[in-house]
Image (cartoon, rainbow, N blue to C red; front, side):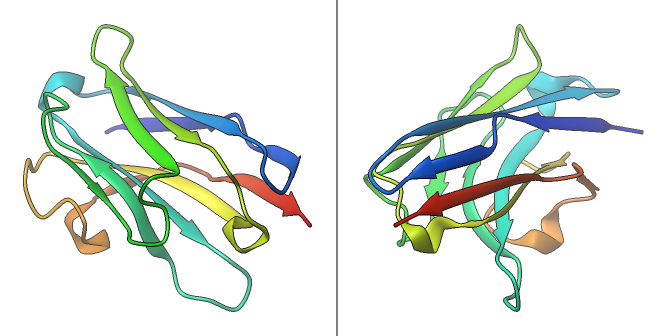
Length: 124
């Protein structure tokens, strides 16, 4: 069993920044693929970013490339999502997820554990 706890969401003005954190427990974190997903009201959940076991490989959705950065600290069992130049369309509930896989990390179906989500609201 893996437990994931997100933090760092909130309300920010357009152009601002937030950093989300997700602390994991229950599995060897250094052998866990991690992803961030988001779901806006009335829309399907979509991948935002993902990172491989070592952090050497990352994936970003086109909509966030150049603005968001995913990183991980295996010593702290934590994955981060640094979000800069936020836009109102980034408003959503953000979820972190974990998988024992080290590939296909851009697909929600690859993940078997999900956090409870944290709300990010970007005002215009």
